[in-house]
Length: 184
Image 1 (tube, rainbow, N blue to C red):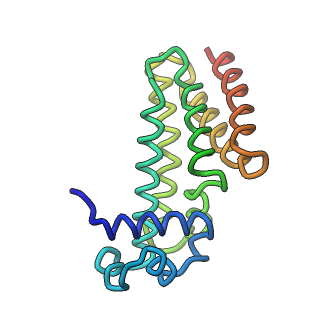
Image 2: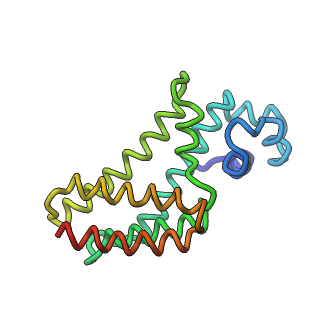
């Protein structure tokens, strides 16, 4: 089912603003104004700010996995390196100021909503993604390898805010090669 143009505009503006200013730093009035929609339009699509945040996170997660899947051939000789390279490009193009999912976990831990669950689920999917690649490649200690690669990507994301996506990715690719070589 295709989303309405106004709902798309709301999600796009909300994602950009939440990413740039944080979830608590952006009000619904600002989103409504920048999306150029009426207040009722927002409330027709989203029951609350939390519901809007949930949808933004789901959309961002879908975009990330679509991006990663398009860039990674799991059957290649080095799918782990391809994932690290793709993640680095994602950081450069979409996420140079840190991880929106970690921000959501920080802001919404212990509150009564789905935001934290969605964000933690995204992190769990990354670990599962690497586990499937390791299984597909018949790697020993697949859980260890998956954890190491997940930590590597999380560290790359974190370091992007300090040294930039290109340099962080360069270091992470070198580390990934070492990890893959030593776990074969």
